[in-house]
Length: 284
Image (cartoon, rainbow, N blue to C red; front, side):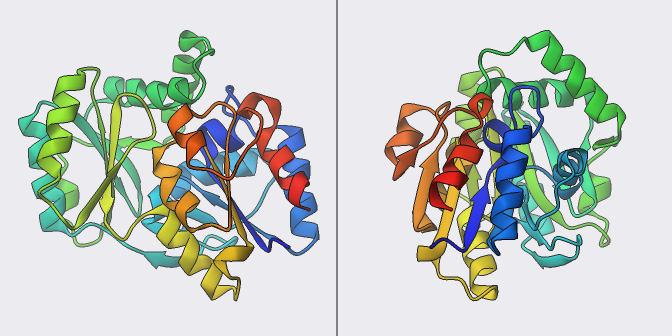
């Protein structure tokens, strides 16, 4: 019997229109009604994640920013694993030296110095998870999300790095130039304190090495008195791998690539075919 189910958002719980389907919602509510802990595990900030959940009328704990922050169903911060300001500056410098754009995720939301590139980054994450979508429609939706204040404009990231009132959770790097992105990735390997993963074709997600979905899921389950053998993790991309390695049952989405599928115990349908609902109902 599974007592905890963790699901990624983009390319997993969300369909190609960035919505939670009625089928997925009903399966989640059914699991919750049976006393199963359902937790979202996402690379998104809390502000971005709760926006979509609230729109669907769902409430649950959230592992945010790849595990850098864990929030209760009521929004209380249960744990935080930021990048040190010194390390954030050092990583940011490596990205700048390789001419790679990046955003900074903090405990108060995500920040960008370039709104146009912020839109391109969001479009890449969505299109990577949903290759069949209309890119222009995704761009319009991305612009709407940014206009709702889910990503904030700032003139200089140093204002965040120098401010003690902000915790730095993640740097989200983005480039259409594969060589630049690869060079930045190689440069970041010298920092043993950092973890580098990806949620799209043209991005890198840089967090504290202890801020990974799998580590956060293990801590969350332990706090609830649930063993990892009683957990199920559902995802579609490389930032979900740490969850797959920890969970008693790992489920890849039908839209995940072959490498991700090969790491998992089971494969469900795609995010446009209510794969999360089918994975949940299979184990209830």
